[in-house]
Image (cartoon, rainbow, N blue to C red; front, side, top):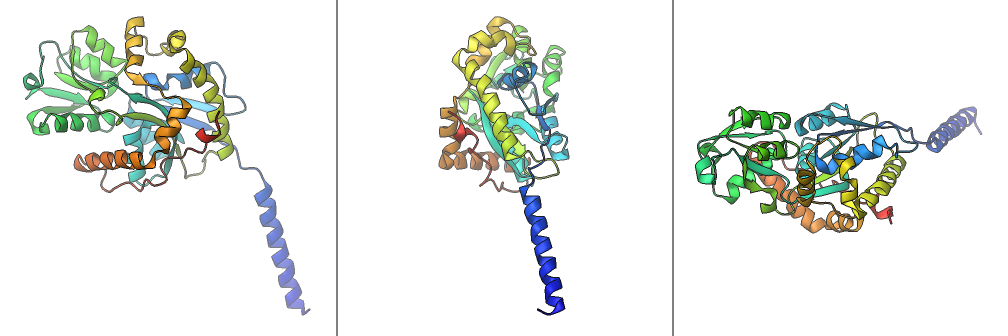
Length: 323
């Protein structure tokens, strides 16, 4: 063989050896940084952390004051996983950030509410008044759905952007007349005599809280890490699912609701078993309809500027390995 041919062959073999060596190396383990806001459906995550149930995983839970901050944290790369509503996951995907849904925490069945202050007992009486809402999160979507269902126009009201943590205080100070809200702020206002004029029960199946994973960047969790995380989280989840009231004290550690308020809150949530999660997340036709509905509303209110490339948004592979 000519000398140049030998050199090329040695170079080729060396390159192949390097590729094989690299491919045999285990994927680098990264810290699972999970962003959440305060919401009853996410509390099992904090129980799992406090009880050190995540073995051989570096899991950090990062609590934000508002859902919009969770979304911004994911965009900036401060977190690589997030607990969000499904419509928020669609917003993130539509912005060009590749994410996938790997767990369904709950479906809201009345837990999200439009509360009006004492003295405003009807939608008609609310017209012209100030409505507070998280303008960059689920609240904006639900407020639009409220307007649509009751044949109202946003121009008939004064819309005030307001983070969740400020809802009850703003109501008490008469800075707003109503607010699209949820726990733990919801119960504070109900104690003050507020009345619900709309709840998520009027839009069944539209408000789902999910766990998403960012699929690009320098610290993407490995499939092995995600499988281990889901398996370990499921061990706690199955215990809570089997006897929810027995876990009320632990679930209430951060929300600090009364026993009656807490019980009512969880009655307004549907917490699906793994089997039900598989059914819901595996129903591609129905999910495509739900996602299309989100897109229509989010485009109308200017929260996205193009449809979501969401064909790979749902990933049930980790759920499918659970008993």
